[in-house]
Image (cartoon, rainbow, N blue to C red; front, side, top):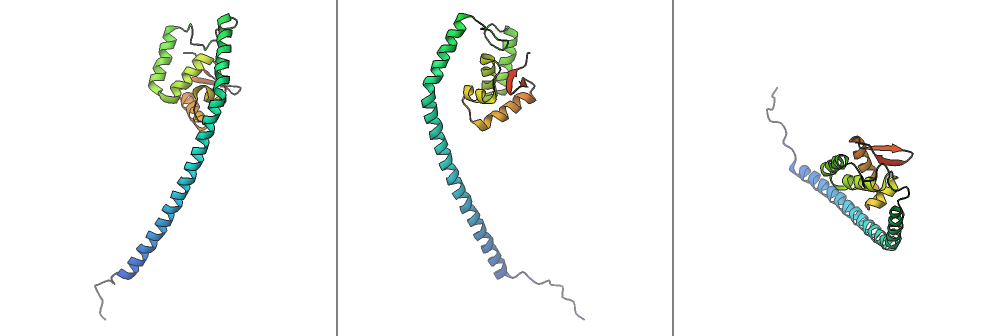
Length: 161
């Protein structure tokens, strides 16, 4: 009874076939992903063109509303809201400025919009800040985690500091 101390060596031809099959499979996956990326780029370009045309069409309306609200503010009737940054205590304004510096980017722009306009819906915030719809929920979540906002009846407002 003889025992072989050598185990059988792997078949190099089989190993090569396995590697070729894996290579083929990976190339197909890459090709599929490249096709998917091309489709997404076309969608993104279409959306960007649409948003650009929408912005172009709505800019006069937005400018007109800014003038109207400027005139309303100039009358002094019901002008200062609790969250308006005009006439805000300098210490409170400094605290918000610190938060804006700390958070930066979209959260800082949301804070600015809420300071200027008071309570707003997510849609109003998105329009005021000019960001993508998908960004709003994440920024609201960030501000909520930092305990900087109140949410009530679909409206978001800054907490009093």
